[in-house]
Structures are given as C-alpha cells and as structure tokens.
Length: 433
Image 1 (spheres, helix red, strand yellow):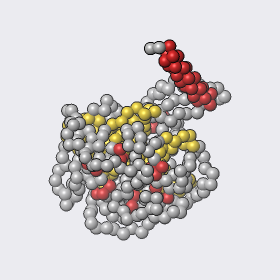
Image 2: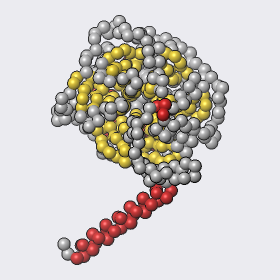
Image 3: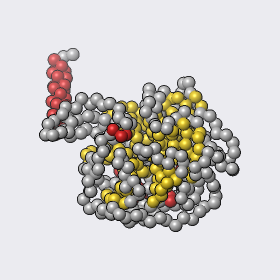
Image 4: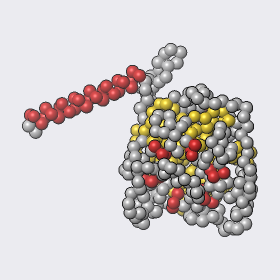
C-alpha cells in the first residue's frame, strides 16, 4: 500500500471515530434514547418448514420460544430461542386446530397457553405451548361472545383474554375459563366508538388501550371499559398515525404503536411524549413492508411481524448511558436487567394529552346485536363444533427445517410505496389504499 492510500485510510478512520464520538457524546449528555438495533431476521418467503407467507403475528414465551402466525400458509410455527424450528401445526380449514387466516398470537405464561385469532373462521383457538388444541371461543355473529373477523388479542395481568372484534367494531374480554365477561364499543368515530379496531392491550394498571385503526387514533379505557381519553389524527408527523394496527408496552411503561400506513413504529413515554420512530420501507430483511404485530419480551427485546417481506425481525433495545434521575442524582445504566413478574413492573399512568377529552364516567353504548346463524360455536366449553367432529391433528415435531424445498414463487415484489392495510372479508375502502 503506497503512502497516499495509507494516509487516506487513516483520515477515514479518524473522521469515523470523531463522528461516532460526537453521536455517543450527544446521547450521553442528553440521555436521549437511540432506536432499537436490528439483531436478526427470521424466515423467508415460501411454504416449506421455516418459511412464511404473509406472517401477521408473533409472540414469545418466558423460555424465549418464538411463535409465528404464518397467515397465508394457515399454520403456526414454533422456534426455540436459537431460531431452530421446533414444531408446526395447522392447515387450511375450519375444524379444531385448523385455520383460515390466523392473524395474531397471545401467550399466557402463567397457564402455559397460546391463543390464536383465527380471523376468517371468526373464532379464537386456545392451544398449549406445545401446540395441543384445547378449545375454541366464539364463531361468526354479533351477539356477545361471538366475533366477526377478530384480529388483535392479548392477555392481561389477571390472565383474561382481550379481543379486538374487528368487524363488529368492539372489544370483548374473556376469562381464562373461556367465559365472556365484558363487551364494549360500537361502530363510529365518537369517543368510545371504533372503526375497525385491529389491536387491544392492557397496561399494568388494567387500563385497556385500543388501536382504533380506521379512525387513525389510539383510545384508552379503564378496566371496566369506560372511556378515558383518545389521541392521534391521520398524518405522517410524529404523534400522528395512518392505520395504526398494533400497540404494546415495555417494562418501563413506554408504549409502541405500529403505524402501518407510514411504515414505521413510534415510541412514546408513559406520559405520552413522543420519543422516536423507526422504519424504512423496502424489500430487504432490515426494511419494513406492511408491519403488523409487535411483541416485547421480558427483556425488552422487540419482535415485529414484517408481513409482506415474509419475515420476523428481532430488535435489541439500546440502553441509555445514563438512566433517569432519581432524587436529583443520575444513575449509571449498565443495560442489565433481571426478569420481573407483572406485579413487580413499575406502574405508570400516562398524563392526559393535549386536546384529549376525559370522560371518566362515560359508559360506551352497546351495538345492536344481530345474530348470524352461519356457524355456532361453544363460548366456554371444551366441546367441539357439531359440524366439525374430527380430532385436531397433533403438532408436527421438526428435527431439521427443510429450507430448500417448496419455494414460494410469487413473482414480483409487493409494493412498498403504499403499504396496504389488509382487512379480511370487508368491503370497507379508504382513499389512501
């Protein structure tokens, strides 16, 4: 190497070091957080073992096992913490253990359960974490306990199941025994009303947060379903949303919104202050194309179902060099955490956001219930539907994924300019689609 090239290399290294030091110094002095860093991408397009076709959902259990709702392959795939495929179960159909558009997943670590929103079958299926079918909830209809294309599901601190009954424009809550205990909401754009809600989650205080997708906002309710506040307008600025489809919390009470129409994730403090956003539209494994369910594990690692890129992305949280001040003193943050149970996680109550309308005593009205008799299912028993008596297939144990066979040859890449919010079985249209 001649001297001129050597000097050029030294200058490049020196400039890079200076820039890196300035960036670190800024975040060190301001204690401002960095967005999470990309760790890996799991899966690729296809229908072979370990491959996905439009995965909509992801969840992780306490042992680090990763469950993926492989939506258009009509199955669930389970991977261990080392990304090795463990088992696969499900196929296209309406019998117990079969799926038609499985969308979202929820893990109940206390009771060792996995819930799957079987959207086009308008039911929720309950499995053991080994993939053994236990029971199903719901069926097509608008009566309490029935669903119309449910999408978002989550388990609260008491082990109760919250369900975004998407095309009935309401939220329903079931206890761990499969009995419906609460239903609230109706179609509309007023406070406490919904237009095609895609996700629902409870915070550590039991308050219920809803991604009111087609109203482009987030709504908050108390544990009894009484409206508290709403915020967000349609747009692309920080704090605005275009089809928010996911919401979840980390261990510090910060919450994250999957802003699908803007191809990004936004993070807010417990008080509702915007912190940062990340996401770049594109076809490669680090870019986003129709982001869907976001799951945060007990160590604040983030897992995102990157639907049209047919993969799951894992992000690792960046810890600030300095932790928040306590009693006027700055604590150094090592980035190390210990696992905590839900009761040990600090409780945060977000403050009322500017322009929010508090209605603490309002009781959302119920929609008119018009039963649809196409299907009837048990809403709490373990009996199988009479029309589908066959036993569910046992999950297929996987020794080694066959990553080379049965490639998905769909042709052209999906458009990344205008990510589409795919609402199953709906005639609803939006100008921005």
